[in-house]
Image: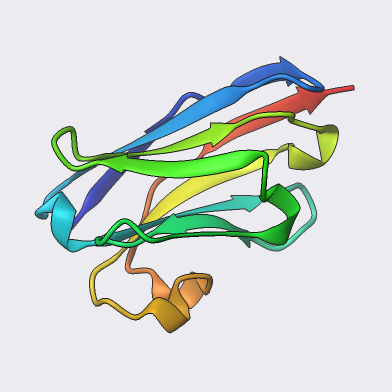
Length: 125
């Protein structure tokens, strides 16, 4: 079992920034891949960004150049730095962990094994 706890969400104005954190426990953090997904009201959950155990990163086209994912294997934490936020970024943000390495499934929801409870991000216009 892996436990994930997200934090850092909140209310921010358009153009502002937030940094989300996701603390993991229950498994050696450096041996898993991590992802961020989001779900806006009335919409399906979608991929945002991911980082492999080797440090390779992936991001959705909608957030490229604005969001950055990183990890700290000492603190067992993955981060999502979000800049230039817009109201379209309003959603519940979830972190997830993938145990088996498969770069082809990094952007797929079903490719992840454990999920956090989510943290709300609201961007006002």
